[in-house]
Length: 561
Image (cartoon, rainbow, N blue to C red; front, side, top):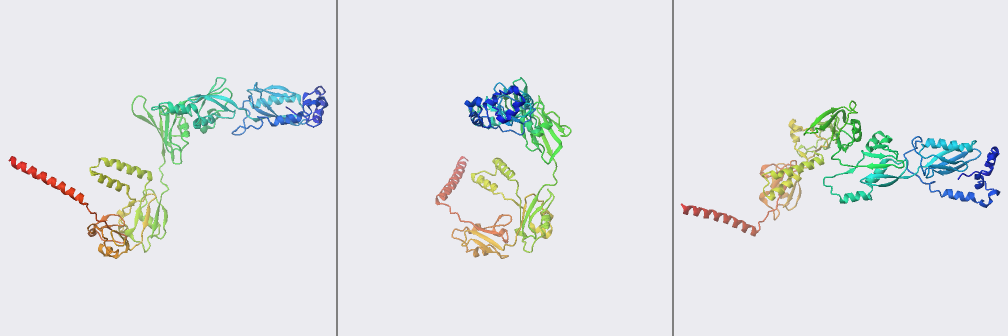
């Protein structure tokens, strides 16, 4: 209702004597002065103020993307407007479009606005109000967009509440992520889908309007073009048809140097520019003029290869089942580096060139070796990509099934232990490289390599069955007995005949007379394994049975002769 103060309205009434019986003045008296002609309703202003505060539409808000375009927004029932009069009368009143599509304005009457654009409705209402209050300024503003119900058809069927500022994508968001969707849950629980792998279509959606027109909705394309026709707003009477797509029967794929490679739903009319956009565009290394399109032949095996350039072929039509691959630029400036530690003048990370920087180059970058550098203990570690290393190990384990060396279970267990214990060392003889300039040892470096230039530890580690396991000072020229004596001698369970020398750099195992002990090496004394008496008896019995069999065969042959 439109409230008008008595004093202001009396000034306006003096200009228009024919309107002195205006009902608005009899109902509402905002000045607080009782109107004697309607004193029975003297508290009407307070009552209507309270009713206005309880208006269910007044404080209801709908999320919107931004300012509404008045030339596109269609007015309909339950839209909430604010009518303002300024001048002799200063008043604002909330008005709601009736179910019949009209605005009811006291003292002005009924104004039809249903189906008009917001611009047209504003113009009509202001024109009608100005006929009554011609000397006042008038505003007519949309306060709150209405809500209404639309129908969704497809595997999921139902009715959903929307507003004129709700896009189709908002409903799809609900349908895809709503775990309470009864139709979808029932379908997933009961349908046998051995060969049917479906999902909600995001590119082949139809929006049928009440007037019979049909809009093709493509959510992927909307985020490329930002055009309303690809993701329109709802109107009353809309029917949203959301098909379920089967990716195996209607797909295109894009790979290579794009932001999000993968397979996507195909839409009739797709072109190269659209498909690149669906893949989120090129990445920084993309060769935009080197795009390969693989198109399968329709009635026979094989495919055709078509070379495309993005700038030249943006509008090239992409067909169902086409596969696109975007080539990457050859990167000569890869971000590769290696780490050098230990006895060099300037340890740290150093850049390398792909397949072009060698071990000696990085040692020189680091300022060369310190006086305490000990080349026999220096190491080069190489760390490959973890995923590659895991797959490589798996392939070797799989191929082991066909290898004739793995006969017994023990052989297989030993092999699996060895393959899982692969180490990341690169075999390099630093002494030959540095002291003799042997270029066969000047290996090419890879990204993430670690070079460790060791110092002379002057120790040998003795462990296993000895009196005192631990480090023994290295003494050049001494044999294994010297180190065992200094470690407390053999233990009670030592197997003295099977002592081994383990080299620091290669981790190879050697008999004492096969190698010379060097600083950093290990001496291992294994435990003597006593054969149980029962096992000895079994072995003797087996040997005896074999001998008996041979003798029996020999006797039979002699008798036959």
